[in-house]
Image 1 (cartoon, rainbow, N blue to C red):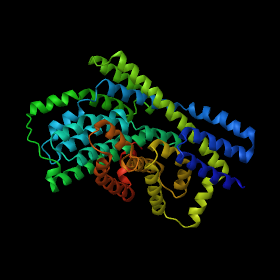
Image 2: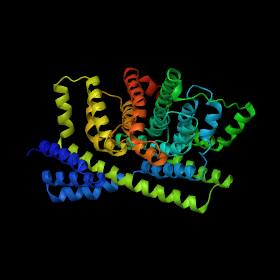
Image 3: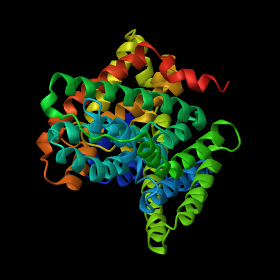
Image 4: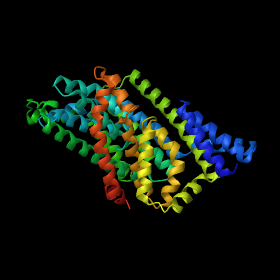
Length: 434
């Protein structure tokens, strides 16, 4: 077999192992090791296994991941983010579908602190869905809104998905954060338009609230979320102002979170230990997967598969739009079965060289992939946000939640199309840093 054939066979075996439910990290370590052995022998294979994981794990930028995770877990367990939905509800409840709109804004604020889609969906599911159901909202609208709003967590900083993409693709993380923030807010706006339109055309799915709140009550609720807003402002304001790097921003955010929670008397030894333990667990799982992906990238490069695929596309005179259409199809299928981090890391060594050959902007491509991968979080049969929400809410079936997310998937497809037709939506804010 030629090296290219070995490389293609390795990719096929990798996909087969994942389909057979072999843990992604184990598959990512096994296939590149076996492939390099098949091409060059034992010594280079063990050499790759010895050198590549250390070189990648020693990357200074990776230290931002546990810090941002710790910030998010501390904010969640100490209740810093607890009042976000209540504040949005008081200000927005009288709009058509007002409680659903409030859940979108609440999710956006929560995402700006935690950076996690699953955590955002779980938290809003506990808080917002029971409130909407109590006010007579259609379960499809209530759960579909929260499941979709949770996906904003992968776009609004501190997105762990964007940090990993930035490290692998060597794209400045602060620029990715700015682009992700713009697209995250654009997605939230699209969801709000959808909810208001749905509630206006079918008022029975979202009965109008008769709640009335004075201006004093509204500002009282805003004061409750001031700590969360202050945390986000100090961390990301300092990052974008150039006061500290993305790595330092994570550490600053975690330290500020401890100080704010302690000042509010919400920091207990128990929730601190829980936050640290969850940060360690999540970081360890991510590192195993990312190091495995780095091995896969080296295997793909050594076998020449990346050049082969690029040459095939070039020989077919494929356009950028056809390539992006193929990427959309592939990632939507992968998103049905894999969580976003795994799906991105497995495929980046293959799609990044092709995108570079076609002249696709790497920063734009990272945001596009993050948005596309998050659509998979709400698509059947294994939309992770849907399963998390079903576990949290309980009384609403998986089928009802998936039917509720269908309209939001449509809105996401419109957003993705606009990103392709108007790249400035992604690139405008990052270009301001130049």
